[in-house]
Amino acid sequence: MKSSFKGLAAALALALGGVSGAAAQTDAERLDHGKGLVETNCARCHAVGATDESPLADAPAFRTLSERYPVDALEEAFAEGIVTGHPDMPEFEATPQQIADIIAYLASIQPH
Image: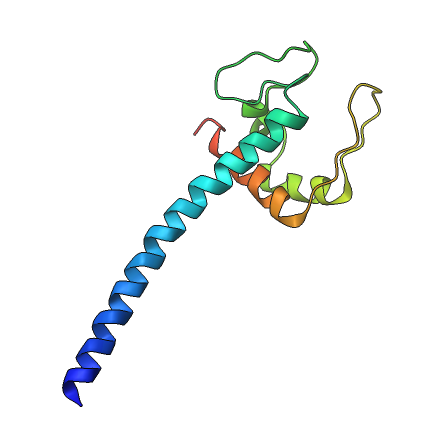
């Protein structure tokens, strides 16, 4: 009985260790996914990386968004579909997971 309990405890510890490693991979995948979404949907006007320049002079670089807004507050804007007063910016609708990934990516490129 003790032996099977030790085996179960060892298997559980191994499984939990694997979950921890998987969570780190998931975070990296989320950042990559968020980056891909902004590159696809926003990079024609905005700088979406840590050092690039915005192709459209009036479009703010995403790495400076925290100077204007708390980045996590943008979640609601994404959830409602970003619509602005200028005609060049397309409407953008995203799923909750896409929004979470975009916010995670945006947070990752803000100056600390």
